[in-house]
Amino acid sequence: MIVTIDLDDLLARTGYGTSSDGTLIPTDQVLRMANQADIIPTVLNRSGAVLDLGRTRRIASPSQTLALYARDAGCSFPGCDRAPEWCERHHIIPWIEGGETNLNNLTLLCRYHHHNFTSRGWTGRINSDGIPEWTPPRYVDLDQKPIINTRITARHAARIHRRQ
Image (cartoon, rainbow, N blue to C red; front, side, top):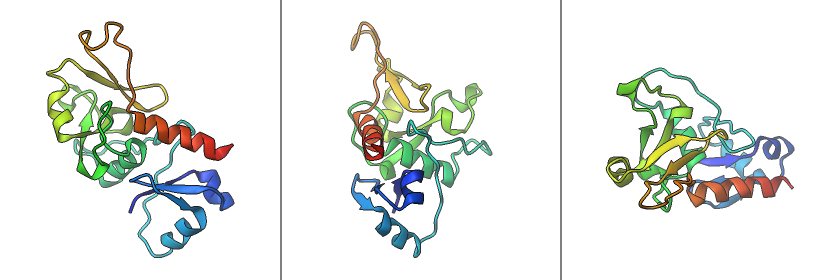
């Protein structure tokens, strides 16, 4: 099970953790569950971006994959609701072109979007908040305004709301 929780909530034993399917879990229950689990911590900054775990090889490590699950919560392509467990890791700047295997160059994409976004004219990037966003081709949006998957923006808004 993957549970994301704000560090301040964890330390204060307040608020909620969020499972990969969006279920809210009270912090005291998260702590009870953690007593019986193998823990792989993933640290998020205030914007919801996962802090860099470094580069060791072309294929994302298990820790990097879990960090992507926590940040993207599934396919990051706009409008896609595929769960993280059904996604592939994607290099924004391809490995063959010098792209690194680190979190500021990786995102989750379902198999369909992973193999078809380029041919349809979309481009991806990690924005200044460390969140994946997608730029549509001109035939979709003349201004080519970048789009963030609404699941990602909703999770970010929920984290901010829980802090208030």
